[in-house]
Image 1 (cartoon, helix red, strand yellow):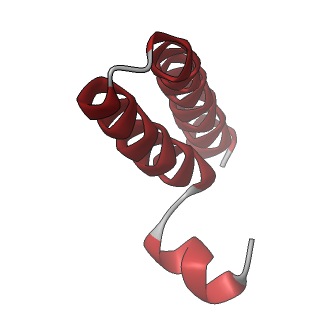
Image 2: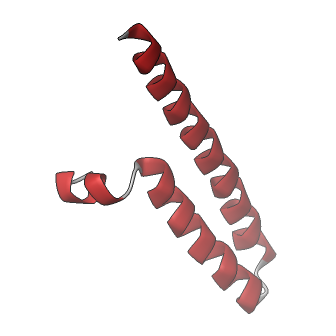
Length: 63
């Protein structure tokens, strides 16, 4: 990920944004397979976000 984009979006937010767009498109076009993949990507994004938060809190406690 480029440095400029890293200042604006973390990786979990980027995955969340793309998954949300894909899920919306799948819902509008009535494509259940793409919708399922998008929902799984949303869940993965949530897990990545929680992992990032855990690492940040662990880093703050260590310092």
